[in-house]
Length: 457
Ligand SMILES: Nc1nc2c(ncn2[C@@H]2O[C@H](COP(=O)(O)OP(=O)(O)O)[C@@H](O)[C@H]2O)c(=O)[nH]1
Ligand SMILES: [Mg+2]
View 1 (tube, protein in one colour):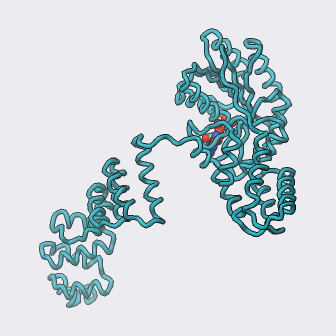
View 2: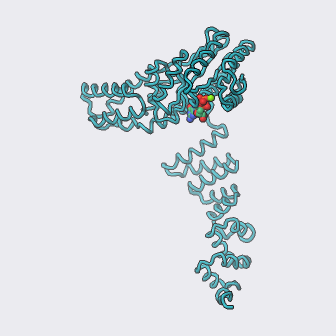
View 3: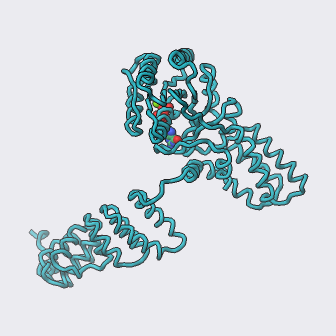
């Protein structure tokens, strides 16, 4: 037969002839070349060729064997960094990256060391990277540094303002008030754009028209030419609107203080209760959570998790139990055992309006039976991502019981932060708390001034 006969060249290659092997590679027979070269690892020249092929073919583990067992000089620092990274030798890889010395390699080294659970060493490299990074890239490096520092507890915890800033990020990005007030010409187009932005932030059409009209009048009255001259008035008008919506949460008093939470499923009741429980426990209060949402067992379990996280106690019954009976048991326990703060979760199945109203009234009556002056706060939890649309839902709850305040959750996930205005105005209920994230500390008092400053900055 003829076809299995090896060509002369291949024969030469098999014997370790470099030229012939190169010819094989040239023809694309890299696998074959590798197979041959692996028999000649002792030969320095052929070994170099083998290493090159391994790298080209992404066979990092074989390349790793070669530099570990035969010849570390085969690879440059850059190649070593890559090989070690690929085979999971993170610290070795970091060392090689660090040798390269440029900011990106140093950053890479830092990140690998962090991954290898060597945060202190990681910080060393990252700080060197930061000192070399071009201005535009510094933030990238700083972010990693901050994450590590946070992990190590070296950073002061995020303050209220930082959390609010993060919470309003989406709204700010959607409206960019800063840009249109940055000194452009005041003309019809400017007012139209401002109007459009206010509507987009979900400030509501009535308030939007009012604000735009006021600014229009002022521009004419004072003969203003550029938008920056209107910024202060804009802030004042916005603050005037939002300021009316602000009120603070009533703090716990002597004896038992009850907070009742209402709202449709998914609005953030349980999460808000968990965050608030954490705050009260931290303040030294004895806190009881009440699993009044008995509709799904998952809802009860979720509240249990929050009880554990916050250090509060919980009263719960089985799925499907009568919420009023859970509350009854909880009130009894609170009274007997002297709890300071009682936070009651409820179900919010809106499609069963009449039963819902009956259920909530029953819960309220049970509370009053034990503590006639309670609840101190009946808080309606609304989801900011649906903006003004939450007003319709809110009306059903308002029909059921008196509501003392709104908790607006998920501001961080919403571009409709302006909805605070129509929500509080249409409902005639102040906003007391805002949720700016899923973390245990992502709940804060609604501060109108800070809110406006942050929105416009
Ligand atoms: N991003 C963000 N998510 C939130 C906030 N509050 C609640 N959530 C999330 O919204 C979802 C529903 O919350 P949950 O407390 O279970 O609502 P409930 O059905 O009213 O009890 C959960 O995934 C929460 O983590 C918030 O302020 N920000
Ligand atoms: Mg819930």
